[in-house]
Amino acid sequence: MTELVFYEKPGCIGNKQQKAILRKLGISLEVRDILSETWTSESLRFFFGDKAISAWFNESAPRVKSGEIDIDHLNEAEALRLMVEQPILIKRPLMIYQSLKQSGFTVGPVLDYLGVYLNESQKVESCPMQDEPCETVP
Image 1: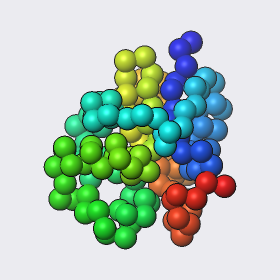
Image 2: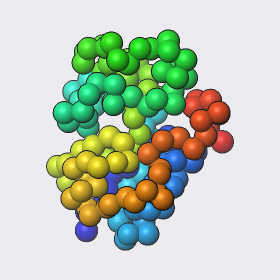
Image 3: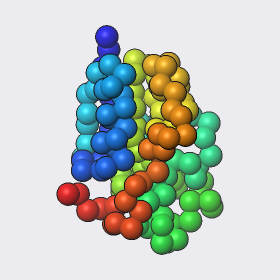
């Protein structure tokens, strides 16, 4: 079976929970650090599909959470430039399975293809550490 490439922020509790769900389903993971990857606008764009630009962003990132970056008023080029410069802004996880890509641990092409269906008790899309700064890695 092909491994699922899973880009995470090391130490992220939400990503840890997401990986546990996938492993429990027997899905093999190749885990990579989203913050140390060398991203380009082109390499990032395919993860977002037809989602609204605001859905590309990690809403727990300090600059988003504080309102310093207004994700509702960015165009595609601006959004991608910001994420290339500051990968902490990218909605996590980014996942690749074969030719499929997606951002976020929610309904999307990768999880759909793998048969991963989350129920209401598995709310692992948003950050469980809302009061902690996103840049801190335990």
